[in-house]
Length: 343
Ligand SMILES: [Zn+2]
Ligand SMILES: [Zn+2]
Image (cartoon, rainbow, N blue to C red; front, side, top):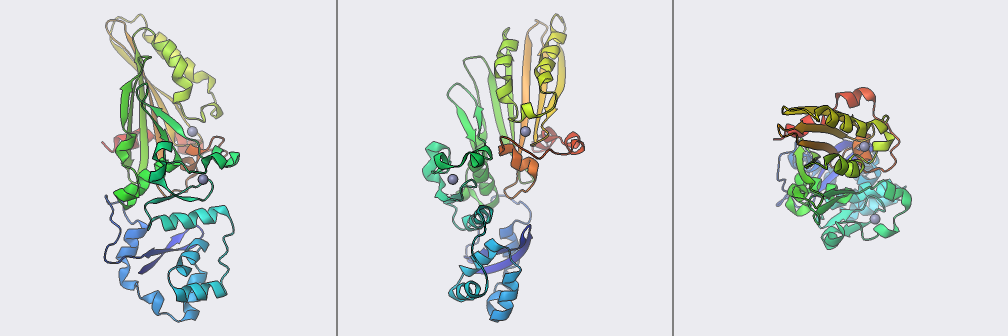
């Protein structure tokens, strides 16, 4: 067994690797993840075990709660020692979830429900989009923090992008295929009965999961079709952002500006960047020489990294977010550019 200490928001985080002969495999180089860090430090693996009890307790006291519990589970000696001298009771659900997230690394068949703190076999839940089996019993406050987005392609082709799905994709990226879902599971496209063409593409850029959704309408009824689906394609915080009433008018204005034009013209417009999560929206309107109008709505969503504490990444799942990102930060942000950099 290997031990390694890394800094965390709530103290020192203990990282343990149980199988030195077959360490965790990573499909891509992601920088210094906890596991790779532990492997790099494997020459220290005897140091903690060889220390006398007094020094082990000093080290353990500097750890965060979830790491203390993990250390107590590593062997009989540490179990007795830490349970005798430290308070290992879980103080709250957040600590329990952090502990389970640590355990997941060695048990890729399990996933932690961040809403209720249940560790469940995620592949068993495939037909329910990998959702927690206790999802129906979640409290409404937890449900509001785990909003799922429906990503459509054709009439019967849709994907639910939930926190579980995002966690599974990011886990597979960091720790290898058995830990989750392939990125390609979010890549879909198709045309539905309303004539809407949708293209959904996901990319991992510097460890961040970014999903780009494109909706295209044309053929004479484009404004009516766009009016029908406009709201539901945007970020869920659309109405919490200032000036939301003007968004659709911007679409109408762009289309009017092109109507009657005999030449092929294009208008590109930034619709808005959400102030609560990392979602950017852009509009693209094009008229052909035959006076046909095509409206394209692009939405880029950044779900962040597996262990990201940034409010704008967390709040992408929050139905009623409270923290507003600084306007200066939002104006500098360009989710589209980050996505395009991964071509
Ligand atoms: Zn749950
Ligand atoms: Zn948002």
